Image (cartoon, rainbow, N blue to C red):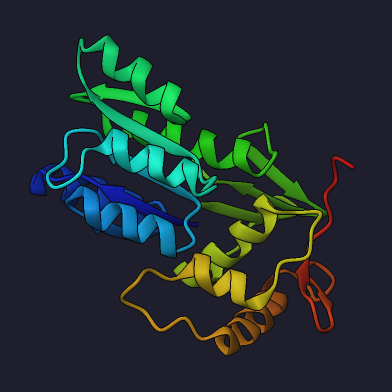
Length: 221
């Protein structure tokens, strides 16, 4: 999963970025509204953490521009505690959830995971595909109840496929959602990662749809 963090307070931004990366996510961070609007309008993100009090362009205006341009990623808005009008304005502008400052990092992570699940049409906090189980809270993959050791990139790839079970995901889409801006998004690397995953979880777990991408079955269907 790839997340954009928009926060102009360096310490808060660094703390959020560190927590998200420790949770197995790829993260980009910007500190002003103009950079946020450009990044969100040109890159593919699974979710955004957006502070409203930003320099150059306020967060509410950024959010309105994204929604006007049909950018549909879920947005978790950070607001000043007690300013209920900001929360109302944010939700009316297209925010999916809000979190007042100061906040506990665990609550931010929990709310963000819930937004990611809902955006993918998943309700349960623990996902399953065949004999595989994903617990995003613990960053744990198990096969028939036995934990599977994965590298950070392997975990991100498998988590993305499991969140989007039931549809074919192209290599280019996977590359866009596995790497942050500072990394080369080479779709050819995806084939190598999938091959490594299959050796660990079984060749039948991830199907190849030739010419289209990769597929994992949706057990809810």
